[in-house]
Length: 79
Image 1 (cartoon, helix red, strand yellow):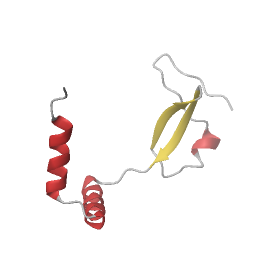
Image 2: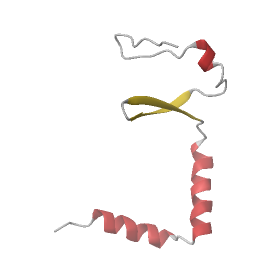
Image 3: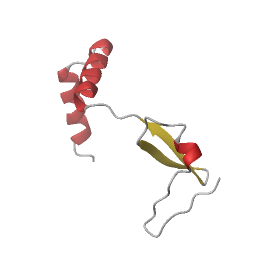
Image 4: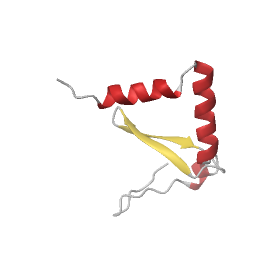
């Protein structure tokens, strides 16, 4: 199937392809070995993402102090 890039650098997915992803509005786009790869992405509300992150941190035993230490380390002046 062909898809044409417009003058505004936009590409429309062919109907047959788009139908296979009825609930997907966003795709992650990367270049791999000179090919464009689209990966479907399902966005979730920020609140659920934050809760998921906090749950995972708790499961891994990462504390707020650990995060502060990591930020300090990342922002340190490099010699």
